[in-house]
Image 1 (cartoon, rainbow, N blue to C red):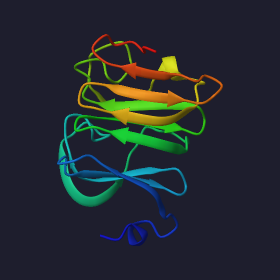
Image 2 (tube, one colour):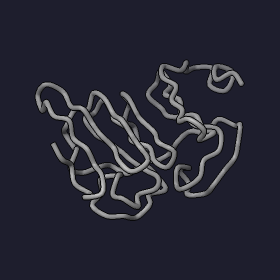
Image 3 (cartoon, helix red, strand yellow):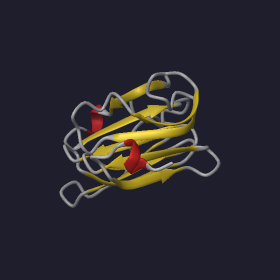
Amino acid sequence: MNLVDCHPLSAATQIHSYTSSERTLVVLRDGRLVSFGSICWGRASDGHCIHSSKVQVVRGLRSNHIFTLSCSYYHTVIACLESKTFSFGRNDNGQLGHGDRLDKFRPREVEQMRGVHVVTLACGQYHTCAGTSRKHARLQCLSYNEKMIA
């Protein structure tokens, strides 16, 4: 599969995959996010489990430009240049940061991170960590307690 053939006006700037998850997420030069492969557990932006080699644009990010992202087997977290953070996927341990334990089938903004410039992200099966810029200078993690911790 050649992503340039699928999106002739946009070259890939980042490629992310999680070991054995059989899916790949690609950030395009124009800031859009596309995915292909096996996407289940709410990781597909439309809420369905799909197995496709066809490149699909991940919906729900509006006009935000993706800076970086991280994905685990069950969830994805996205940091945008506009100082917004989005997450979606499985959320049985509060790892998405929305104050609940409900799975999210489309990217949803993490309100407690609004205005915080995230420079790095890491996802594990049951947690998410975000490293922030010098202005906020913190390592914040979401886990079983559903709250950002320093």
